[in-house]
Image (cartoon, rainbow, N blue to C red; front, side, top):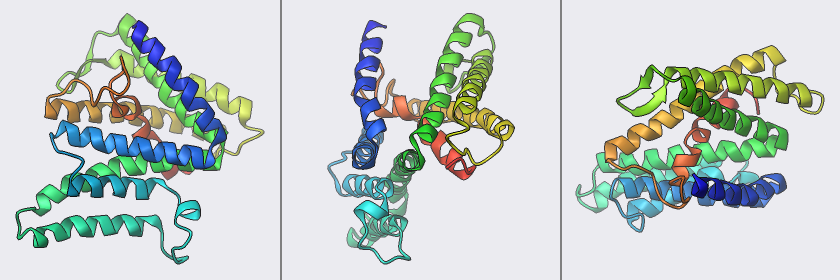
Length: 266
């Protein structure tokens, strides 16, 4: 526990200033985190990221994360970075021809899915910060409040297993506690900042969406647990002592921010 707390404090001390500054700092950080997430998924599958498909997958994730306006301004006005990402898909598919079908479409599917999963999640994380610091922290607080509420309520009152085949420690009571915690925190936050930030919807609708975001965040956690269980690993990595890997810390975020964007919060 002590190691977890120390790691969390150090990580926040580094992370919060980057979030506050935004711009190039958060874009580069998100791109690096996306590459690390790609590496962790390749590592779980016992594939080498320093390979054709590994490098292409990492490049694909970076292309999705970095905004066109700053990094790819030279592209025609009607072309976005997703078009560049699709070139990586074509390259992976083309490998089947070059390798004379030694590399197949089934094998190409994994690096494409990996780069989409990591790239789109961190892309919308950056997009939220581009909208405003208030919006970014709104999403982060929902994720953090859900995690803390689920842990505390689950530990104290948890009896009914939520999904034991995937994550045996999670309980229904904990999941509900996470949702309630997220709604309470979101309500306080929106009431404080509603005069400074347009959340795109009425307060009541934002709180209804918060329930959805909290559920989505917990589902994202379960998805990562399912991936780890499939590959037979305890943690996605060991870059964060006491916490595991980047995916272990950002799994909920990678689901929540794309859904926030889909619901028009930013």
